Image 1 (tube, helix red, strand yellow):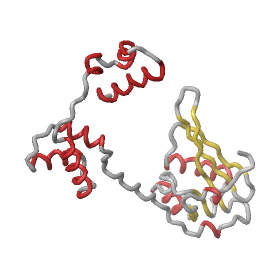
Image 2 (cartoon, one colour):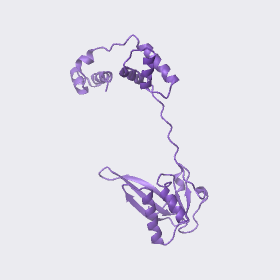
Image 3 (spheres, helix red, strand yellow):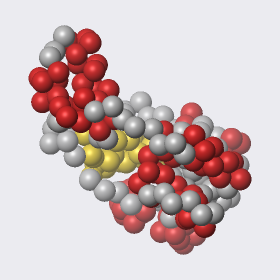
Length: 224
């Protein structure tokens, strides 16, 4: 925390809690000499702030380090830390990059047109997440027969990737003695992984990916 922020924190404690300056400075970690010293504003402060705002408008993807180098090239004699402080006080920042568009799986049949008409025709699977008593995350995989609403598998583990999903599907196939005609899932990394694509290709199982942001298109099990 900067001295200026600590100075404001001391003033807030004095105003709201009625603490003395000595006690408020001790709580905040601010030397009393620093608290009493009035900050000096440099003569070129306004001009420097104006230069930084103009720089940010012309080069919105550049940060304060490039701004500092630009000022040096323009003949300014200014410390990098001062440029960083003024940059933050002016609220200048580099715009956040747009989130990368999520990868979508390639469906062999349109998900909104696929409706299960018999058992073992469409298996839907998805993940849920929870936390155990020790604060560690746990991942749960559910596999459902869309026609019978039967929960075919409920797998819980600390980590479940595409290979683990394939292992669970293989186990269900061994138990039921058949492959599904289609699997329905969302566009998560485990579902669009090479392991699941290979499993569908070798087992001649079609894939029906739901539309992004449409969880209601997935199957629901009455057993879950």
